[in-house]
Length: 295
Picture 1 (tube, one colour):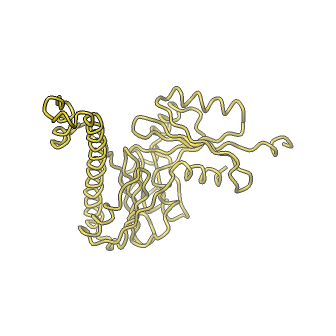
Picture 2: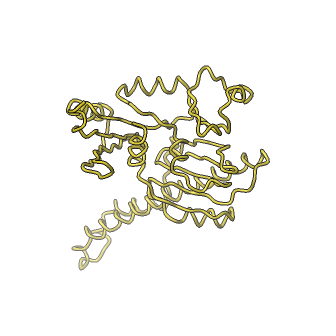
Picture 3: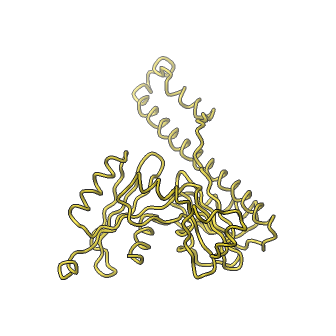
């Protein structure tokens, strides 16, 4: 017990983002960070190796992640009978009750699947619980949490979450935009035969510039495409929410982990006439922050 007081625990948060694992390893002395390390891993084997080494060095290591799949939900009650009335089988789910007013749940199957894949996990959170922890204004508000692969939506009616949805943003469709194809074609032309000899020495530089512009244009299109998907899914969520006779949504809050542009705020304001706010968040730091309060 005496030795334990001198050992500073490691808090490790991770999640899969597109084709890589993002990880944050932190140590604290009271409320001050004394060690912080961000890592990226291309495969699960390297992730597991890193975590195993930390665990070997420090038995006080707490590892957390969150559930991204659709095998989770939110309901504005903690009453199991009302779960049954809503058609939710309580014997096959894990329920987290908040303030005896509402609850988040996930299937036991999902928990077992994740813990089988990552048997070192100590703390597993619902994506909705992360939004709920971070939310501030809960009066008739919509919250979005966005990572590269997923969009998580949570809507509050009179300070209680009543609607949740999870949307997979990555489609298995590779779209080649015509203007990008045209730029790529230009870069493959033998320019020396077509340009005046006096500018031949600048060809390599010009091609380099074209390639850089191609990358920038492709990135802009990718972000714009994702923003339109987000906007369309907001519209769908609002439609489903209003169909149940709920109050008008007064504000939309966006928790962004992928560096969206403010265009999304303008798009929401222009098309939906709802005030919106975009906030950049560090999801890994958020996971560790919650874990520190739960240990």
